[in-house]
Length: 96
Ligand SMILES: [Zn+2]
Image 1 (cartoon, rainbow, N blue to C red):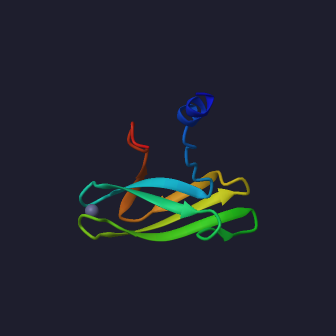
Image 2: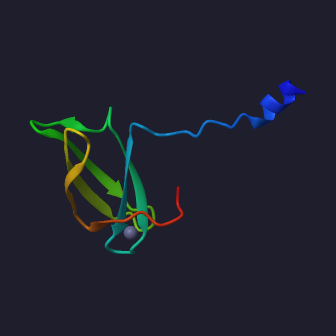
Protein backbone atom coordinates (compact mmCIF):
# COMPACT_ATOMS: atom_id res chain seq x y z
CA UNK A 1 0.00 0.00 0.00
CA UNK A 2 2.73 2.42 0.86
CA UNK A 3 4.48 1.39 -2.31
CA UNK A 4 1.48 2.32 -4.40
CA UNK A 5 1.09 5.55 -2.59
CA UNK A 6 4.66 6.48 -3.29
CA UNK A 7 4.31 5.50 -6.88
CA UNK A 8 1.37 7.77 -7.48
CA UNK A 9 2.45 10.69 -5.41
CA UNK A 10 5.73 10.98 -7.24
CA UNK A 11 5.45 13.94 -9.50
CA UNK A 12 7.30 14.04 -12.79
CA UNK A 13 10.16 16.47 -12.65
CA UNK A 14 9.47 19.57 -14.62
CA UNK A 15 12.01 20.07 -17.33
CA UNK A 16 13.84 23.33 -16.95
CA UNK A 17 15.87 24.49 -19.88
CA UNK A 18 18.70 26.14 -18.02
CA UNK A 19 20.84 26.72 -21.08
CA UNK A 20 18.18 28.21 -23.29
CA UNK A 21 17.41 31.89 -23.56
CA UNK A 22 14.21 32.57 -25.43
CA UNK A 23 13.28 35.50 -27.60
CA UNK A 24 10.12 36.30 -29.43
CA UNK A 25 10.44 38.22 -32.65
CA UNK A 26 7.68 39.62 -34.80
CA UNK A 27 8.16 39.75 -38.54
CA UNK A 28 7.76 43.24 -39.97
CA UNK A 29 6.18 41.98 -43.15
CA UNK A 30 3.51 39.56 -41.91
CA UNK A 31 3.56 40.19 -38.12
CA UNK A 32 3.96 36.51 -37.27
CA UNK A 33 5.73 35.99 -33.94
CA UNK A 34 8.48 33.39 -33.86
CA UNK A 35 10.05 31.96 -30.73
CA UNK A 36 13.79 31.62 -30.97
CA UNK A 37 16.09 29.82 -28.59
CA UNK A 38 19.66 30.85 -27.92
CA UNK A 39 21.79 28.23 -26.23
CA UNK A 40 24.10 29.71 -23.63
CA UNK A 41 26.71 27.11 -24.28
CA UNK A 42 26.70 26.90 -28.05
CA UNK A 43 25.13 30.02 -29.50
CA UNK A 44 26.63 32.86 -27.50
CA UNK A 45 29.98 34.39 -28.28
CA UNK A 46 32.13 35.79 -25.54
CA UNK A 47 32.88 39.48 -25.59
CA UNK A 48 34.98 41.65 -23.29
CA UNK A 49 32.02 42.41 -21.04
CA UNK A 50 29.79 39.41 -21.46
CA UNK A 51 28.29 37.70 -24.45
CA UNK A 52 26.72 38.39 -27.77
CA UNK A 53 24.30 36.44 -29.89
CA UNK A 54 23.84 36.85 -33.61
CA UNK A 55 21.32 34.95 -35.57
CA UNK A 56 19.47 35.20 -38.80
CA UNK A 57 15.89 34.22 -38.14
CA UNK A 58 13.74 33.16 -41.04
CA UNK A 59 10.04 33.91 -40.72
CA UNK A 60 8.14 30.62 -40.97
CA UNK A 61 5.32 32.28 -42.87
CA UNK A 62 6.79 34.66 -45.41
CA UNK A 63 10.46 33.58 -45.24
CA UNK A 64 11.59 37.08 -44.59
CA UNK A 65 15.05 37.11 -43.01
CA UNK A 66 15.59 38.96 -39.76
CA UNK A 67 19.11 39.55 -38.54
CA UNK A 68 19.11 39.61 -34.76
CA UNK A 69 21.92 40.79 -32.55
CA UNK A 70 21.71 40.73 -28.76
CA UNK A 71 24.36 41.86 -26.31
CA UNK A 72 24.41 40.35 -22.82
CA UNK A 73 26.32 41.15 -19.68
CA UNK A 74 28.25 38.42 -17.86
CA UNK A 75 25.08 37.17 -16.18
CA UNK A 76 23.17 36.66 -19.43
CA UNK A 77 21.03 39.73 -18.95
CA UNK A 78 20.26 41.27 -22.33
CA UNK A 79 21.66 44.79 -22.56
CA UNK A 80 20.92 45.59 -26.17
CA UNK A 81 18.61 43.93 -28.66
CA UNK A 82 18.64 44.82 -32.31
CA UNK A 83 16.91 43.22 -35.22
CA UNK A 84 16.42 44.07 -38.85
CA UNK A 85 13.10 43.52 -40.65
CA UNK A 86 11.43 42.60 -37.37
CA UNK A 87 10.94 43.51 -33.72
CA UNK A 88 11.53 41.89 -30.36
CA UNK A 89 8.21 41.40 -28.60
CA UNK A 90 7.01 40.13 -25.23
CA UNK A 91 6.18 36.42 -25.16
CA UNK A 92 2.50 35.70 -25.64
CA UNK A 93 0.72 35.06 -22.32
CA UNK A 94 -0.20 31.49 -21.32
CA UNK A 95 2.41 30.05 -23.60
CA UNK A 96 4.96 27.85 -21.86
ZN1 LIG B 1 6.88 37.08 -42.04
